[in-house]
Length: 275
Ligand code: C2E
Ligand code: MG
Ligand code: MG
Ligand code: MG
Image 1 (cartoon, rainbow, N blue to C red):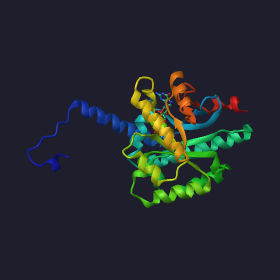
Image 2: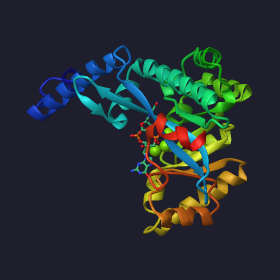
Image 3: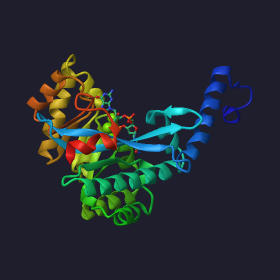
Image 4: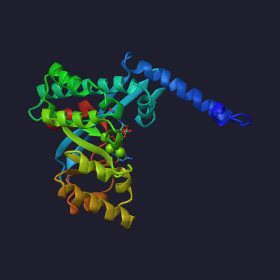
């Protein structure tokens, strides 16, 4: 950095930056141990049919309790993992664990829930992503139609022909595709025109302000109407209050997810409800 700015410029590297760097290095070091040491688990959060308590899907959310650092939020370690190929290792672990859990549920209940899996851009762009996913379904004895893949705009923005090919192949195999955190990126609309998706998930930031902000209300209405006119299912994320729920039901949002219906919880939590 200092070199790039040229002679005579100064880089201020203070104690706070040093602490932050040390923390980041420690986190990254620990994260390399997460898979081999068995420190990862999946929690599951319900997505319900709007206006009912009926379960539609469960979203798998990664949890990490480091032996040296304790529990670490995915908001912290996922972006770090995404900077290297570590995200591929974590992502593959998530896929196998979600499929193992689905297979277990298939043994235990007549109506096992569909599982929605978050996939990172770098993971999705892997050359062998589709064959890896199919091999995993065969290994665990599960069907692609039992899964939805949640992608973000980061995945679709890449100027990489492999992305469209992977999407097409996955759809053809029977996986559902959803666009997560919809509305937060630079050009959400252009992705809807270019790619054939099944579902959009309206980002929590729009839902949080629904009760107080007329513009959020207008945007959410417009997103739902647009999604429907494109033949997409619409999910609202981060629904926490009955008033938010009422608004979304009135606007015919299809599915709702948020603390109002349930927090992410271990798989065992869902067993009795569905057996
Ligand atoms: P996301 O996929 O958009 O997941 C939704 C996040 O919102 C989850 O946070 C969930 O716990 C939280 N959430 C759900 N309902 C509510 C609510 O009503 N209120 C509030 N305040 N929060 C709610 P979490 O589990 O901390 O995950 C954060 C992000 O980390 C996820 O956002 C996703 O982008 C990423 N992530 C989590 N698991 C995985 C994974 O297995 N693979 C990849 N690539 N990313 C993951
Ligand atoms: Mg998600
Ligand atoms: Mg989301
Ligand atoms: Mg989100």
